[in-house]
Picture 1 (cartoon, rainbow, N blue to C red):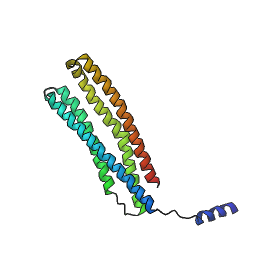
Picture 2 (cartoon, rainbow, N blue to C red):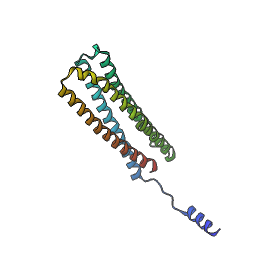
Picture 3 (spheres, rainbow, N blue to C red):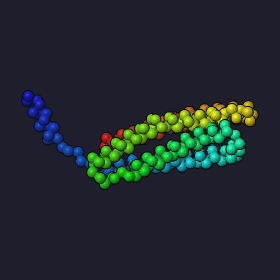
Picture 4 (cartoon, rainbow, N blue to C red):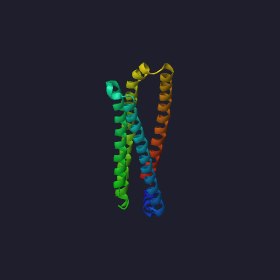
Length: 185
């Protein structure tokens, strides 16, 4: 029984860890970095949507149902991702950094949970939808392009898919680590 009393006494007498101004500033910096990355993502996605729309009109895609379907999948998936990022940014902006520590931490945990849902459910679905749209267009490319250029499109698309998948995975891992640190801190 003596060990329990000593342990209880040690626990009661331990010093409390208070948040520091430096820790709070680090938290705000990490949140700003996440917001900036989300903004950059939306700019890149917007540029891609504009390019796809331009491509659609350049090839007179409105005359072919297969092109409309493929481009719609591609643009639609990018727009869904943009909306998810806008929703996440709004949720991040609504967080009250001046609220008490427990409330703010709960808001961060909710945000962190939502981001996991976006990254691990929505991102793969969006990527699959985008690739499906591209695959719908491949027979048209094969029928209208030279063999060399068609092969170039296939090879470069596979390489881009691998590159962007690795890039997206690294970004997700970095964001999850950052959010986990914020959540624990």
